[in-house]
Length: 100
Length: 335
Image 1: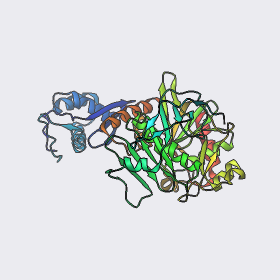
Image 2: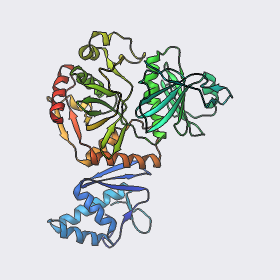
Image 3: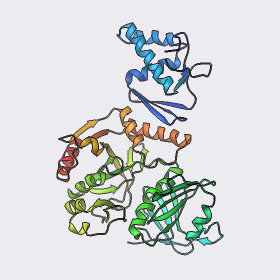
Image 4: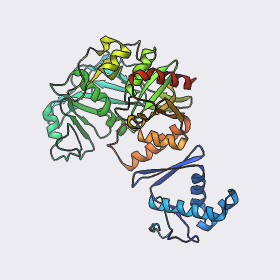
């Protein structure tokens, strides 16, 4: 992944998110693509989109989930890569960096 | 059929300045919409409405030619189905051998013309299905590609693309005394008391063998819908069809036949809201009209439905002799 954990991510323009039950669904109005999130993914999205940095999001999630820290880091990186690939998030500069 | 007529006003002019719709008007209700038509339609008389209103007018061929000047067709030149989005926001759709339709930008009017080779029944299938779906979406409604039956006092919907077997399964339910609510196009309305499913035209499209098996030999003694299919249009009387909205109990998303053929038994799997949302979006009836506005509305409607309704995946081997098993499993699941 090309982005540092000190970076902040934000929801890309024209992206809608909604909780359904304890899961989540997103749509990118520009690409017309949908993405479904299970409960863990919905929680990751919620924390990532409101945290001041990816590191801050990681710290919150590490508190919530009984998981190996390295495993959580890898899962979070993979999740962010997927969101970047679907153009659902972007960095504060407005650019969406290429996923690693 | 008892038809209600009203004084013809206001009148509509086509692009050549000719007056359309003069004379008698007929008023109906279908999918929760009020339809005012200048030609009789095989629909129940008006009894209720609320989701919107639509005018259907017969127009001559040159009215369509004038509207299409300079239009760019989005379908293949050799296709029997052609459509174009016009500069004024209207949509033109045509099926060779059936007829052509011009849906106004706001979806409040459909001009139509039946080809001589098409039966009135076949023409109305396309008018009140595919063509009407453009009007529904333009009126900010979201039709689903589903067939629904009434079991007791509740509706059950079978969601899936064409040729998934929805109508055949519904016919099996009719054999057991259930009534058809709608075939192929379903419009839902959320309310404080639940999700209402609105009735469609009182007819079902079936292959001859299925019609004979579940509705009797008389139902199968009809000509095919058009030259491109062996399906029949089977009208249903009040005993076999429901003309009023019914609360929806559940939606069963039918697994594609090519996947289900490997399954030996009937399978019903409840879906999470996320998976239900994906199925509902995949089951939208009209995929031609795409815009950010529509996607936003569709997103809202489908997430709301996924949150409120049980949606289940239904898989079964595609054999006519197994449909009664499927029916029994669905009825047991509904208990």
